[in-house]
Structures are given as structure tokens and as C-alpha cells.
Length: 172
Image (cartoon, rainbow, N blue to C red; front, top):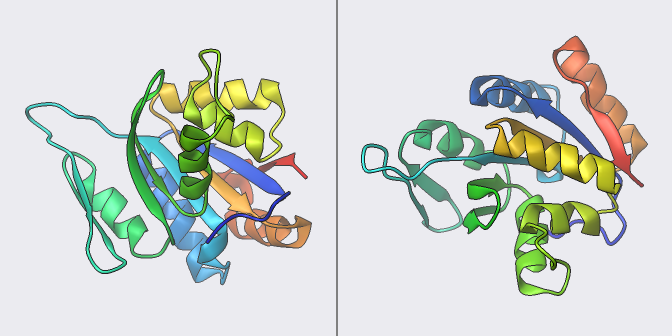
């Protein structure tokens, strides 16, 4: 699913993949439309933890250090990408934000040393100071949860997550 041309976006940062997965599960149980969620985080390529990703009939399969984490989320979020992004490293992106990042890689959105993540966030209308904060969070091994939708959907997500996450509206 492609994000809207000028979507409203709210983003939360989670320190661990467990906290991010718990948030997605809470949102799913709370009835939030999973087609409106994305999650972004780094994974690692080492000899000890080989990463793999393939698409098997509209279902992504992941292997490696966080394979179970990414695989579980791929079962509920629509759209996926595994990319090696200059400046940021190995990224897994699930949800509609994957399409935006791929578009940033393919298009003229990025340039002058800006990463594909920064270009994609900018394309969604996220202010530059927030783009830098989110990109820095990803580089620091944190996870972004992106809610694509209007204030009503964002309020629903905030109500479900409660104090567990600070879901900040960053684009309109």
C-alpha cells in the first residue's frame, strides 16, 4: 500500500525490538488498521548472525539474529524491504514506509549525503530537525513505529499505547 500523497504521520521511538513488537501487538489487538503501520530498525550482518530475507507468496521470511522479531511483524504489517542504506547500515522496514524509502532510493529525493531514511521522512513532510532525530535513533539501534493516518487514527493509536510510547505527530 502506498502512503497518501500528503499523509499525516506520527512516530514513536522504541529502545528495543521487544518493546516495538509489544506496541505493534497492542495496536493490532486494539483494532488499529495494520495497513497504516510501519516499523523501521537496523539488523546486522555478521558471520555469526547471517541475515536473510525473501518474499514467499506475499509473505516475507527473515533469518538471522532478529529473524523471529521481523518475521512475526511481517505477518501483520503490509509491505517489506531489507536494504543496506549508506550512512545507516542494514535496515529492515515493514509497512507502507518501505515503499517511501525505496522511492527515495530510486528518485531525486536524496542527495548531498542524505540517507534514504532522511529522504523518505522528508518526503512524508517530517521537519528536518525531527528527521535528524529519527535517523540518529535508528543509528543508535532503536526502532521507529510510524502511524500513517489522520488525527483520528493517531488518537486511536495513542489511546491504545498509553504511557508506553510517546507517539509524536510530525507531518500533516
